[in-house]
Length: 429
Length: 135
Figure: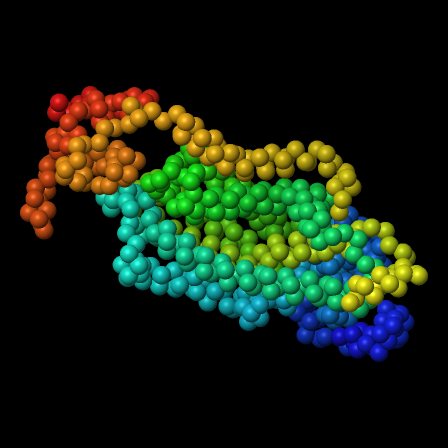
């Protein structure tokens, strides 16, 4: 905020004013404390040697991270960190934390900053706070259970009022659609997914604007790539996991994240397919959920679930194993991993109990499965799962501004190219 | 962030391509299955519907088509193992016997109703090794 105030007087050359005027720093003590709570106080040991930036495989040549972020964290520069695209280009390989001569943990600090970021841009903000604090966990798990139970209690009344009749015989069909009809599950999840997607869009727009505003304030060079082209590059990078592949210290992250990523993608595709069953011409009429065991869709779903179990087990063992090089684990890490594993385990258990024809049990586990799915998807904008959208946004932004391209030297912040004031003007308008 | 900076990106690409193909496979399969189902369905292999005016079946047609085997299994356990060979509906007072004779009242021909569809899908259920379907 200091910079903004300083920058306003000189409309003609805001960048020069911002850079050259002496800057008074008002450290945000709460922010320093919050980072310290999550990442440990090791960032206060930093003496700015830059070993972290030098060892990082992902850091660009110009203005590399995470040295500057360590300074900002120690100074409580919340404004800089929350509008810093580099924080999200970090994939927490922990090469920096391993090599820090002072025992600092830049990898953990950036992870903590990312969660601060998620909470800061959350909409509505109170949900960001709830998901970030362990005290609210029982409440957050009770919400889906109560909502789902209420929906089930109201089921028959709604069905009668709207004239929904089950199209299957009660006696022989061993499906779930008696207890959890398609219209109920679809309507329930559509409604809350819609709310969650609003939260995602608001959060991403806030984040993107903050990135833009930060760069404009510092008079950074104009974008080098169109947004659609940047999206393509970023999505390609996310699919290939090429940034994870560069990690040296945390090698297993490439494998575990790849497995979880594609497992989740497979499950999402199957879920989207099956919810269209009433209108999908490629699903035969009279289709009764679940799919047969040997249906390609069912095979894909089972493989996806197993892939997440495998990847999640690797992640869990990495986090539990003592003496793991680098990263510590915070509440945000544990809760997301636990939730992901619970979703898959209850899903596979429901399937098993279904094949065993265990009548009340399969419905009870399906209920808990749906509640966990709700928690995973509806709290996505506020949990660590939000990295899905924020990191992609940051990767798009990095492509957009050409973050990886060599830029004119001059340290931080980057100056606009000399003799090209037009471009800066255009960008800031 | 460009791909060619990855030291062994060339080796990892096929893995990702394979995973994407695996995820898209069921979709392709569904399309192909649909195309072939439309082109290749032979009406002579479908079960023959009972004449109009006969009583309603115990379940809806689509349900019976997909899950009649489950019903038959359940009824077999009821009748043969538990000795429950019929029930009186408490509301209508109508008695329903658990026997193939009930089916045969509307679906008179086993050949037309059961066998040709089973043959068409290359299925040899062993029901009729023990159980009698009235001709």
